[in-house]
Structures are given as structure tokens and as C-alpha cells.
Length: 269
Ligand code: NAD
Image 1 (tube, rainbow, N blue to C red):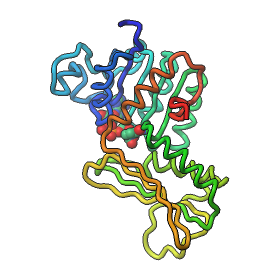
Image 2: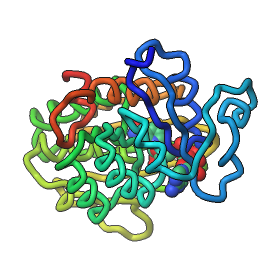
Image 3: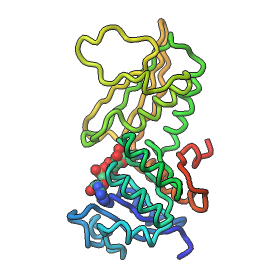
Image 4: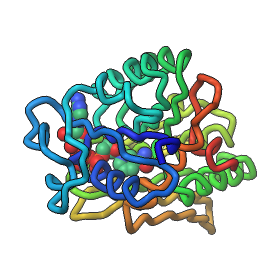
């Protein structure tokens, strides 16, 4: 039992955190060794099983990430960009695999994550599901096959609590479309049109975001030409698809060389 990789879940009380804790607990491939929440959170100091409304599981939620990471082989992290950057340095120090699901990371965050990956294994993906990673592959292939007569638009929908837009998944799909077309996304990206925008500029990649209710995550990649249209669509109905992918990444990362990996590597796509 003790040979199973020990997992720390950060953001323990979050939507993804709770899902992950439940998944690790029933897994026969990993064990839960610690749970981290931000300082001052009501769960700190409580048994995580009880905090989630069930029986005690013998793991007390801490606000000390370094102490938690020191006992772990992997840190599974769905929190916020500021927390994730801090965790990347600490996970590298503890030589633990850092699985990053957090989205909304800006260039300054990514640079720090890159620096940490010189010393540790980091698996980062804007979406950890098998379906979306396959969709990313398909998007690139379709974009490779079509020229700029085909306008590319990415439409995403998420629950009302989501704080960043476009979603990490939409950006991942945009990167794949741009790579397929041989352009940089930064040069082609157009987000959130409003008002008198003028006609659509040829070759751009557009992003639109819908926010409402409890939508788990929906993404359409639209290739629209004169007289015809291709729509590639993924719908996530349950967060377990992300948690399952993240746990798989934590186990896959054991014994790998330091560096940054993504779910394509984990899934062998
Ligand atoms: P959430 O708000 O429900 O949970 C985030 C949790 O992180 C909260 O409990 C918060 O208290 C905690 N947190 C914040 N700062 C912290 C710190 N310094 N130390 C410890 N804990 C801290 O959000 P969520 O819906 O669970 O999503 C979290 C992140 O994961 C978002 O960026 C979201 O976009 C992303 N996400 C990614 C995927 C994927 O497959 N990659 C899937 C779903 C969500």
C-alpha cells in the first residue's frame, strides 16, 4: 500500500479539489497523503472527509504546502494562477510531480512554471479529458487541410462561477488551429466582438464565451466557408473526466525526466 504514489490535492474545497479527493480515495493506484487550502479557509485544520460532509479519512487539511508536498510523490493542482506558481517552485523543491489543471495562466506565470520544470516533472493541460485532447488533434488536422477561405471560430460555454475567458480549453484548441494553419495564435486571435467591429478579417481565429448555470464545459470549433461548415464539438457533462485525466497524469509522471509535459504525452496521442 505504501508503495502507491502519495498524492496531495491543492484547492481541496474547490469543485475540482473535492472531485479529486474522492477519486484518489477509491483509486488502487494512488493514495491521498495531504490536502491543501488557502490560509484562513474554514477547512484548514479539519479532517477532509468530514469537511466534505462524510466520514473522517485521517487527512487533515493544511495551509502549509511545503510540509504537505514533502510527503508526496505528486501534487494535483486546480487552484488559481498565483497559487499554482508558488506550488510549482515548492513541488520542484520536494521533487514531486506537479499536475497543473489551473487555467488563466499569463506569460509571467508560464515563465516561472518553465523555470520550475528544469528540476521537476510538470504536466500541464488546459483540459485533462481524453475527448478534448482528441478534439485538439482533430482541430489541428482539419486546419492543416483547409486554407483561410475557411474562417475558424471557437465557441465555449461554462458555469457562472468561471473567472477566466476564453477558457483554457478554447485557447488550447486555438493554438492547435493556428499551428495547423502555420500561424501564431497571438497574431490571429480575436476575442469577444461587440459593437461596430467591421467585417471579419481573413485568417483570424475568433473566440466567444458563454457563461451560465452549472455548464461543466462545452467547446465548438467551427470552420465556416461559403456554402458549407464543419463543426467539431466536445461536451463535458461531468467533472470526473478532468479528475480522471489528472490522476492518470500524476501516476504517469512518476520516474519521468524533469520537464514540461501535456496530456498528449500522458495519453500517448
Ligand atoms: P474553485 O474556485 O471551485 O476551486 C479553487 C480552489 O482553490 C478553492 O477552493 C480555493 O480556495 C483554492 N485556492 C486558491 N488559492 C489557494 C492557495 N493559495 N492555496 C490553496 N488553495 C487555494 O475552482 P474549480 O472549478 O475547481 O477550478 C479551479 C481551476 O481549475 C480553474 O483555473 C479552472 O479553470 C481549472 N479547471 C481546469 C480543468 C482542466 O481539465 N485543466 C478542468 C476544470 C477546471
